[in-house]
Image (cartoon, rainbow, N blue to C red; front, side, top):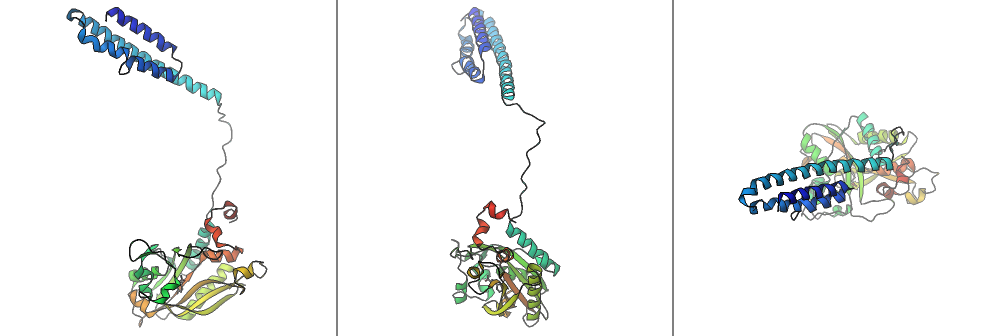
Amino acid sequence: MSLDALTDLEKQALAELAACADEAALRAWNTKYFGDKGLMKAALSKIGTIPKEQRAAYGQEANRVKVALTTASEAKQAQVKEAALAASLSANPLDVTLPGRPRPRGRLHPATQILRQVYAIFADMGFQVYRTREVETEQYNFEYLNMPEHHPARDMWDTFFTTTPGVVLRTHTSPGQIHVMRESAPNPVRVILPGMCYRYEAITPRSEIQFYQVEGLAIGEGITMADLKGTITAFAHRMFGPDRKVRIRSSYFPFTEPSIEVDIDWPKDDPNRDRLTKGTGWLEIMGAGMVHPTVLRHGGYDPDQVTGFAFGMGPQRMLMLQHAIDDIRLFWQNDLRFLRQF
Ligand code: DAH
């Protein structure tokens, strides 16, 4: 290849470059001259084959052409980019004076709202919020709560077992009692323990496989059933208004003795009343009782020194009562028509 050929190559390349109208054409040009089998590449690799006396001149010229083409193509590239931007701006004109689009403001999920109401009421009564784990061992979920292995009372809680033996999704917030006690003994305790629980149950308008509970626990010297009744009644009147009726029934839980259940009356004018309350007019909102001595012992307390009460309530049930919501499944269906009402 001669020096003339190099000059021709430069001319031809520059002319073709000038004709490139878009980035695709530029890429093709680049491949043609600077690709692995490109013409410029070929010209450069020939330097070694040029007779000695012309080699220096050829080499210099080849390098000059290479630099000239590179510079020209970079300039062209910038020019093409700018033209593309200008074209897209004039095709989609931007009016910076338009008012911004309003951002839809979210809201708290009704379950979160009711939980916060519960926290506020108990905070006024001196209860602290304490959180514990959702994945528990069978020991915490059952055994320390006075339900040894094979105890038939375990059947009261249809359980999700994990693939790790002895590890379950907690069926209630009650195992949190043991965690709090073990951290606090021998000091007095006044806490609520909110959180998600899981049960392997049929999903119906009244029960879900996952739901919130709020556990309560008070331990100290001389705490009696009267304190429990007073606390629950004060809570129910703050939550539902002073006119709502609270009904206390005796019941059974392995971790309390004596045990009770608490019901709230369902609004009389609600046509769904019978269906939701199974014809009784009452909806259960919590189980409760005096902490069983065995449970106190598992928590590190001496049942001869202290007593305590505990309760476990379903805050979603309470929301249903407040608004006469007739289907608990609405909570986790993410239907905005439901959620926006709160
Ligand atoms: N853990 C019980 C349940 O899920 C509710 C309960 C009953 C909690 C009595 C308590 C209690 O703390 O004292 O059904």
